[in-house]
Length: 384
Picture (spheres, helix red, strand yellow):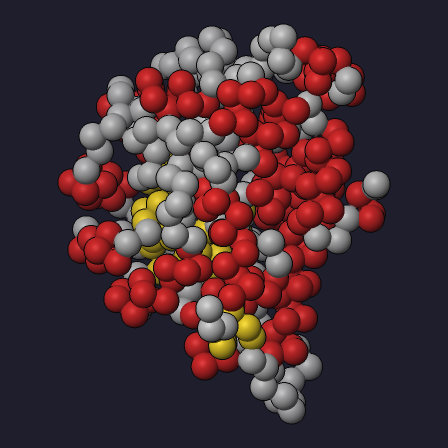
C-alpha cells in the first residue's frame, strides 16, 4: 500500500502498522483494559443517522467556526498528542505545516517532541498547548510563560490522567520512551530497519518542553504508565484550574470533561471551552463515549461555553453529527497520528484534507450552507 491509496483513517492505520515497530504502533493504536471504550468512541457514531434536507439551492458551503478565540476554516482540528517524533522524525512540525495549509488549529503536548519556541516561531496557525500538571509547580508556571512569549493562542488543561490507565499492550510490547531494546521488542525493531535507522540517525530523542526539569522520558527510559504515575500531580482541583485560567488570562479549555456536573463547573470557573474526552479510551475503560454524552452536556451548558468533541472521529460525517447535536467543533489524535507515522507531513496533510473534503461534501448533501444550519432535528437516534 502507498500513501496515494489511503482514503480513510483505517487505510493510514494499515500503512502505519507496516512502517512502525510493534511497541510504537501499539502505543498509538491501543487503549485501556479490554479496550471497550476505545472501540465505542467510534462505533457510537453509528447509532446516530443523518437526515438530510434537499433542494436547498446551494452550491458552496462555509465550514468556518470560531474556537478558542481563533477562526478556523474547518470545524475539525488536531488534538495535542505526545512523543510524535517516535512516529516520524518530523513530529509536530508536520502538524504545524498542515494547519498553516488548511487553516485549522493544532495542539502541542507537554510531552511533545518539538519545543514551544520552535513551533511558535515556525507557524502562524492557531496553536493550543496542552498542560499536564507535574509535581514540580514551577514547571507549569514556566510552560505558561513560555507559551505566552511564543504567542500560543490557547491552553488546555488535561484532567483525566491523575493515574495512568491500564494499557496492557504497552506491557506486552515493552514500550518505553525513549525506546529501549528488550527481548520482546528486539525482533520488531530488527524487522523494521528503515524506522530503526532513521530513529538512530536523526537528532536525539527529547521532550524539550520538560527535559530541563525532568529526566524521565528523555534521558531515562520509562513506560508512559510509569511516567504518568510518578511525575504527574494527582491532587489537582477545580481551584487549581481556576488559578491557571487567571494566570494565563486568555482562551482556556478543560480537556477530559465527561459529566454534566463537571461541564457546569468549567463554566463557573471561567473556562472558555470544554473538550469532551475520555483520552481516546486510554484511561478509564467502560467510560461513556464523547458523542454519547454530548447531548446531555449541550442541554446543560450549550451557549455558555464552547463544546469540543474529542475522540473517535474517523469520518467527516462524524463531525457533522457532533455539530448537529450542538458541538462547537471536533478534534482528534489518531485520525492524524496514523498518517504521520505513514508519511510525515504528506500523510497528515492528505488525511486532514480528505476529512475536510468529507465535511464539505456532507454539508452539501445535508442541504446546509453553514455550520449554523446543522440542527439536532437533522439526526435520528437508532432504537436499541
